[in-house]
Every structure is written in C-alpha cells, then in structure tokens.
Image (cartoon, rainbow, N blue to C red; front, side):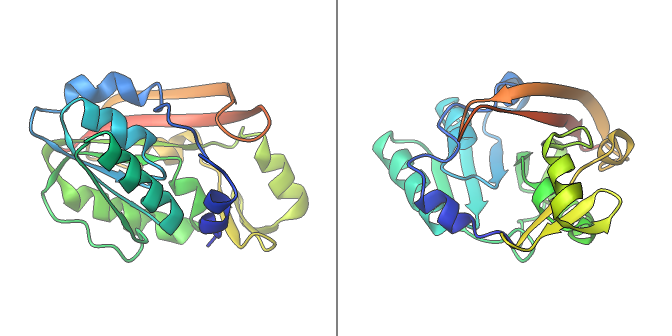
Length: 214
C-alpha cells in the first residue's frame, strides 16, 4: 500500500479544502439526522462540507498526519467530524448505521481482488434507502499510459508501482456501474477535467456513481 503518510507530511494540504463539486449537489438527498461516513477522509475537505450542513460525519484514513489535521480543523471550526486512522480492508463498518457513505478517489488505489470486499462492507453499513457515492479513475485516465509503460501489470487494467508500493486500478464503465447491481442508480457520470488541487495542473478521467440501497 502506498505510503500516504509521507505524501501528507510533505504537503501543507494535499488535496486542498474545497469539496468535490459534484458531491456537494447530493447533500439535499441525505435525510436530516442521517450519519455520513467518509472513507479516505484525508484532511476533511468533503467531510467538512457535510458537517457544515448539519450532518454528523465520521471518517477514516491511513495517514495519521491527515487525521490529525482533519481533527484539528474540525475542532477549530466546531464541526461534528470524528476521524480516525484505519485501513478500510480491516476496518469494521457498523451495520445499518449510515445514511450516506463516500468513496471519493479511493477504490483505484486497491488491488482488484480487494475492491469487492470493500463494496460489501459499504453495503452492510448503509441503512435502507441509504446512499453511496463513488468516484474513481477510468481506463481513459492519463496516468494509465504511464502505468502501462512503467509498472508491473497485474491484470488488464490493474498495475503495481513498486517504487511507491502503490496499486492502481482503472475501471471500465460497465465494471464501475456494476459495483452496486441491486441498488437504484440515481446518477452516473464521467468527467475529464483539470485538477488544480495538488501539484502541477493535470487532467483526470473520472467515473462517478450515486446509488441507493433498496
């Protein structure tokens, strides 16, 4: 697994504090009093948005530095955000507990065989009619070309970067939209946009899904 701790230590705010612009559109769909879980909470950019809307938010991340920053910022701004250091592959999500679970830019950093067990945990953690939001890189993502040229290939769209100890998985449209086959699909989308949140300006090709547990 990539050492995200070093990434956060070497950056003042790795992803910035502006929330995912698409994700913010869905706050009104989450019922008042509903609990939100942000998997891969980072320094809290998405969690803070939902806390400011009055939701109780919990989040996990691998990086201790990210969690420390998230906790400090939520305390400073009096936001109801509880963040802890944890690995989603070993973390137990409380069953039937969350009205909204966020997986923003998370699944593409796991080996293919670990993705389905993560999805199963999310399904168990949602209440009936609960919502899940997922975004991830697709096969048109510019970094895939670098992965093909430089990294060990584990599958058609899965790679391992030994230098950074990092897995990369790029989703096909059908694969991505099939993550929650029994859920009601509320919205799917694709974006190819410039990312200004970290490092030099660069582009990402991303798939998005909002689905509801039946």
